[in-house]
Image (tube, rainbow, N blue to C red; front, top):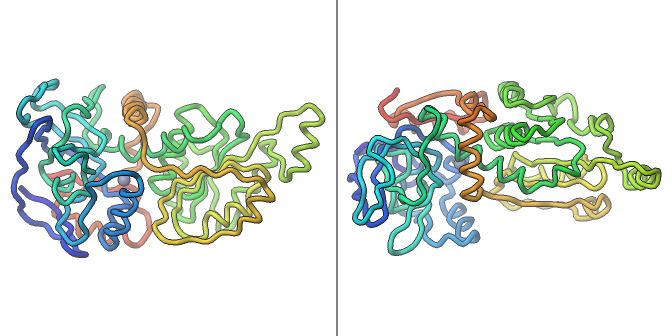
Length: 359
Ligand SMILES: [Zn+2]
């Protein structure tokens, strides 16, 4: 079968052996698969990705020296079952799944495994138990967006929305857009989204952001006063003493580069909830004093639960999240190497979707 393979620090398009399903596994045909920022990073820093997964308790991680077929944001069609399968779905059924597949050695991350190919290949093995049937006639591309949008659902679930007087989302790449979508799917507002790229600001608006800000000319934090969020702890104490209930600032860090957490701490009003969703894979430094003075509360989050994944699929299928809007391009497997080169320079692209057989 055809696959776009990580070989060293290059993406090459080549034929590889068709996978054969073992016990509990299902052979599927990839219908759509998103290119993730983590994939771009893993091409050059596979050992960092491996370290991150190991820290999260996943043992079978990518071998930086071996070939790897990326792709953890996918939808697929059932082709065949391994031995002793329950055969819950008919061949041809469109499914999606959290990117995990198990064998005798335990769980593997589909898309960061040197043993199991991910969605950059024409076929994959998945675990039958984890499959979700795609409902409501949702397209393969929309269903493949469940994974990146589930990241937003998880981040929002980590926040205390009842206390928040509004939310600022810093960074409107796929992660920030997923956070905006999850906030708006719950009817939460106001949501202020900030990004330097005009294309990404337009997508933030399409996801339902109430206000969008270009940080080059305006700070998203100038709006807090309008939302009834006091700037200082003293002001907050005064409002409470007068019997009021001031909202807290809620800020999502969705950039993932060094310096952003400190910049948020510097700009935030008192008592901020800061949810760090952007995956920064380098060392960063920050000044604890500022966060202490403001009594900042930090949550660092990664991934999603199986329930959050399923809830996200329902949100997309029932129109609460209009996921397809973030897809800026569809390509075939042959186009992956070029797409990686384009995505390396942040620009107008948001989600590039591989549709095997297209392009
Ligand atoms: Zn991803």
